[in-house]
Amino acid sequence: MTSPPAGRMIPTLAYNALNRSVRVCSTRAGAAVWGRLWDHAWRHWSGTVTTELHGRRVTVNAGYPYPMLMRRWPTYNDPLVEVVHQAAIARGHAVTVVDVGGAVGDTALLLLDRAGDAVSQVWCVEGDEEFFALLRQNVAGLDRVRTWRALLSDGEGPEASLERIHRGTASAQGTAQTAATTMDSLLGGEVGSIGVVKVDTDGFDGKVLAGAAALLDRDRPAVIFEWHPKLYVATGNDWMRPLRSLASHDYDRFVWFTKFGELSHIAHGVDAGSVEELARVCLDDAGPALDWHYDVVALHSTSPISASDLAALRIARARRGGRPRP
Image 1 (spheres, rainbow, N blue to C red):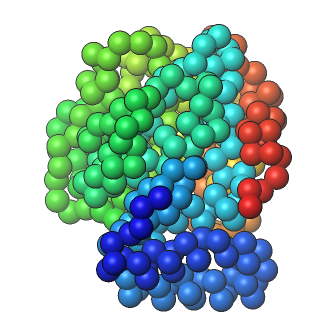
Image 2 (image 1 turned 180 degrees about the vertical axis):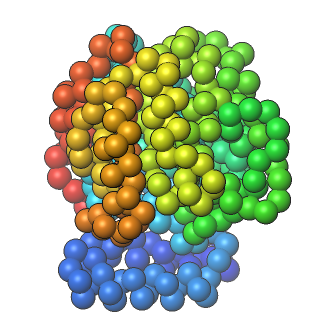
């Protein structure tokens, strides 16, 4: 394991100490103290730090929260791990996963760690320049991971530029314009069937999926996307669009998970009234936790994946030992 540059040693030590101690947040007092330390650290330090993520030494931007989220809520990414395993079982072979919003490579490393036998390739698409540089660095030498730098939308042309809304994510809320393309245009010439599409683009998920019409009709992959009404509003998008777009391509089962990766409910079809009520809960901060939102898995009508099997998350739980990692 290589050491960080001398000038990054103290921020790296602080980042890893905060990561190791994040479980003190299980109490109100612990969360208050830890939160003050976290805010203090990243008001004073910027740049990058090094840490271990899913068994690999990586470089992330200072204040990147993903490792802490995984430690504090071990179920955090269970739905993604589960749907990849279920897709591989249904198809009888390892699958290609498209990861839109690849960030610094955390999803690719997660899947190689916890779903490695179910994954043939991970195709990572990231539009933020800094994140993309770290993504390429962190997955260098992994022959099952491919990377593209692109902002995806529902058509070719200008879109709002990506803007850092906190150190862990960038959202299309900028005042400048940047060129966008579609998933069909970017990946349409690639060979091989896609088994899972994961989209986490902070309010742009509906536009990304609308630009994948040919892929959805051709491969009928399982789709998992973030449903975050506040970010749909912030980016000027409709929170109904990803659901309606998928329904228009004959996706008829939707398994909803909380932001912590726990089952919320299973829906057959899209009930606009129920969805609007869920959106109001998120917008009004009336959910069980701040910044309430969901991850939704959508299954095509012909998919042999069982929604109830997916909801049980049995494989994902087994892969992490059924308990929090130390």
